[in-house]
Picture 1 (cartoon, helix red, strand yellow):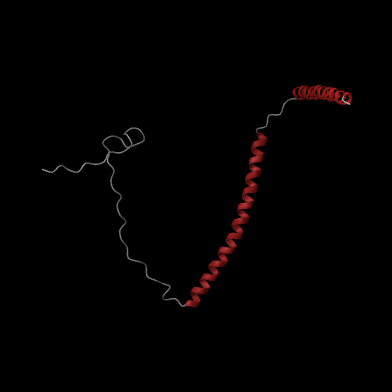
Picture 2: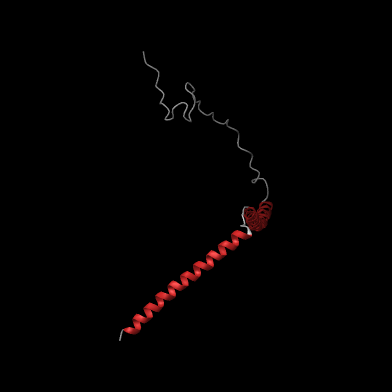
Amino acid sequence: MDAPPRRRSSKRRAGVGGAPSGATKTAPQAAPQTAPAPVERAVRPAVERTAERTAERAKAVVSTRTSIWAKRTERLRKLIRDIISESRKINWPDAQTTRNLTIVVIGISVVLGLVLGGIDFVLLKILEAIP
């Protein structure tokens, strides 16, 4: 007696993103075959087909211009929406905090200016002492 062919095991384990244990997969069914559609182009005259192609090209050019304009305006609208959204998230400091931070910045600037001026003065004296 021949044993039935063994199915390959799935790489996924049941319960970890795979099918539950005991579940089997079925093969997808093929789509039914249909007869090809009748060819209309062979019947219509060549002049009509050329006119139709020209009209399609004109529509494509207009739609391309419209789509470019639409894309640019949509980008601009999205930028404005993003700016408004982000500006609503700003948490402005109160007057007291602003005053204190301004004093800190001015103080650091004065101290740094004095330090750099002192270093410049010392280096100038050293260079003047060298003959």
